[in-house]
Figure 1 (cartoon, rainbow, N blue to C red):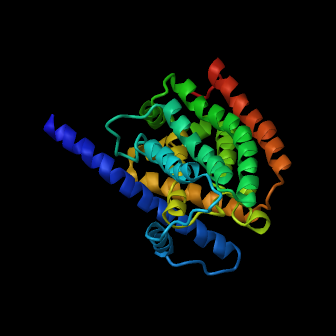
Figure 2 (figure 1 turned 60 degrees about the horizontal axis):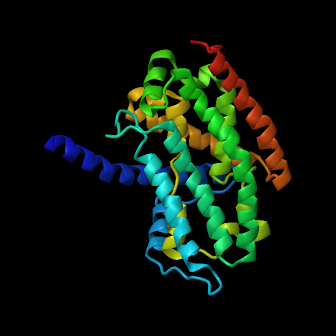
Length: 301
């Protein structure tokens, strides 16, 4: 019993450190690939760590007209959503003591989007308000295909236990091969949740500075910057969690990051109406097709 408690404590301490460290390296990979595709050199490997460390130890300036409670709670809410989701995800052959439920993970992954809306609205900045309104529209449009495409995997396995979803793929093969439409829809939504083109409309730099993040600085901005576990979630749902191998899991996450980097570089930014219509038509249609297949037993296994 004591050994089990110690191992659980060690997991909950080391998992966030490992997850956010690897996440920072993946963000560097994203910046490096994007720079190379744009004929630039890109930052050194330690740049993300330096940026986040600097932010976390700098003073956060609060605008006088901001709603201080909402302004401070928003980044904490975003960080909490990603942290709780991370603590429920298997990472290769490392399994959490309390294996996550797919529905619970999806709920917590919605919190960062809500936090961005709250932060932008409560900042007192017109740029933040515009960014928050854009985030609201995109959140409404993206959550439908995002949730449907994720639920396809649980319906196929007849369980919402994330570990059972991974183990079923180890036996029958990755979900991406059986449900390609849901996989494509999920990746469309990933681009939005990560704030990448063509869905980086809420914080479009050339239009509204940084949108919801305009008035954020210091440690509060740092909390927004280090919040990200979406690639790991995608690998678990559609690529068999790396087949229970930590090295393969990280390689697959790296491939997901590379694909996102390529798509971000090759696409121009959509208008808000274009993004809204695209997500509610094409992404939702693809997700629903595979939802019907999973519900009626049309799968390939």
